[in-house]
View 1 (cartoon, rainbow, N blue to C red):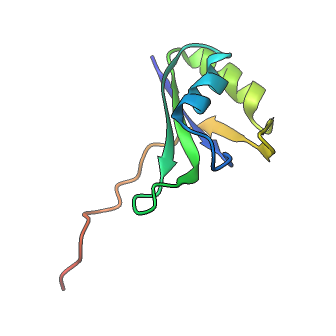
View 2: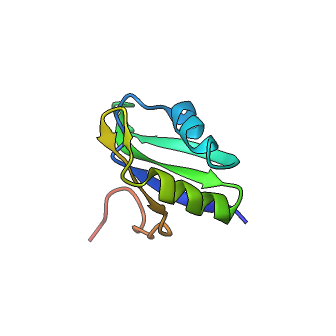
Amino acid sequence: MTSKLYVGNLPFEVGDDDLAELFSAHGEVESAKVITDRETGRARGFGFVEMAQEADAQKAIQSLDGKEFQGRALKVNVAKPREDRGGGGRGRW
């Protein structure tokens, strides 16, 4: 079973491959995605990593949460389920 992790306080220069490489030292990474701004394409400073094994995800949290990476202290924890924010577009009254 995969475990999805939230990774916050990422340097803005970090890409998907950098994130995957950082976490691969702790187990098999199924996916790594740095979230970018839709309009500018610039990284927003956080991302998500899916680890193949929950035990590896826990090891990654213990090892990387609070660790300095490229000058910033990472925040790593289990990702919360995405909330439904309603439909997009303009609301009509």
